[in-house]
Length: 261
Image 1 (cartoon, rainbow, N blue to C red):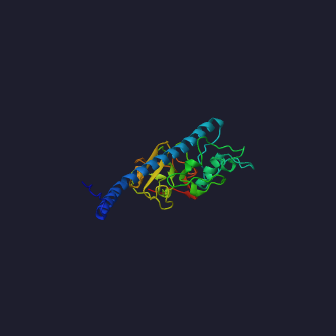
Image 2 (image 1 turned 60 degrees about the vertical axis):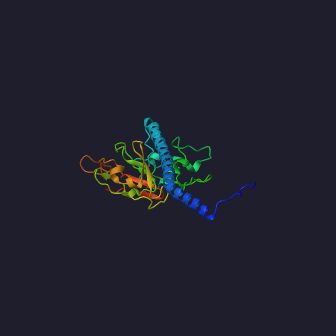
Image 3 (image 1 turned 135 degrees about the vertical axis):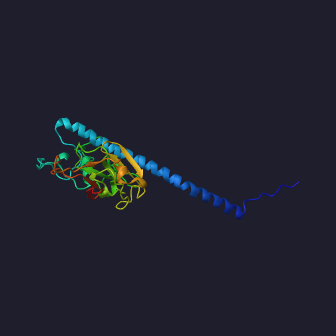
């Protein structure tokens, strides 16, 4: 009695198997990409929320001491201490996001006994993720390529809680609004100035009230971003104050004034 000869796959059978695997991979790729995107958006949102909590915690600590809040300003306030020493953060004007975050963290003194950040619970790791690299160790000056957030400047307590106060840098902040009447659904462009994080596919924001808002590009319109709420961040005329510094966004490398409507 003889054993039957073992047979392997023929070339045609191998090609069929490879074809089936290719079809399955193509079908699963969108689902896998979506899961990765969602995970990155969640992680980025958590880091933004951590920055928000750190800043609001510092503001709560400073208020009974008679000190101004640590939200960035684009112009030194009237009566600010302009002596020869290092100014307090509430008395200092900032022109970029990286300049502000470095000062907030006392970056120039990292590793020294004099290092004294303005906030607890914040470090440069909160500025990275989803394709944005972390600031290399040993660097004393924070560079814009390592900052994934734009941050609102000249923030006042009376501003609406729906206002995005931290925005991933792939959002064109000039297309956000300083005055919104509750109806426009104009889309805000994504990925035009920075391809990371999320390119033109998604974005993450943290609102003034502390809520995390993350969404796909489909929902990057003013009506969704502001939840249809009306507001005017720079009031003037009757009942207003035209002397207030206008609300702006400090971005990596510069600042932008929201003019969308």
